[in-house]
Length: 143
Image (cartoon, rainbow, N blue to C red):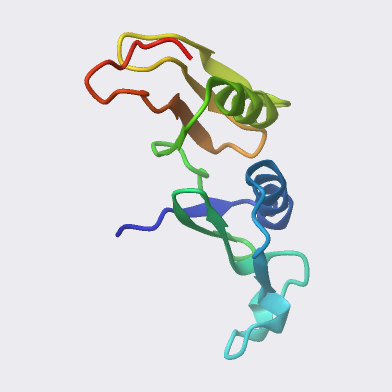
């Protein structure tokens, strides 16, 4: 199973803490560059995360900050897809992730889901939140 690995510019700990809160993860793990074994002394930044992870409802999410001094464009062309069982849960997650970010597509009913929306959160991560069909043959069923 592929595992998404996100990269941040110094906001990894904050972003993963938010995701853990939103999704109810209780297993958030963070290791800072300063605490990592075998890391060059020039990279021992006590504020940046060399590896973090947590468990979302559908699998593991891993992440890190770019090394100190390295440029990069966090999550420029990747979205994390999260499917929920209910419209209420889909709306809650969408609103929490959208706070301080930018909505790409408002959360609402589509031809393929009772609820679907796309956004870029305040840390640059793109998300697609979708509600599972009650009947796999009828993706437009009411909640």
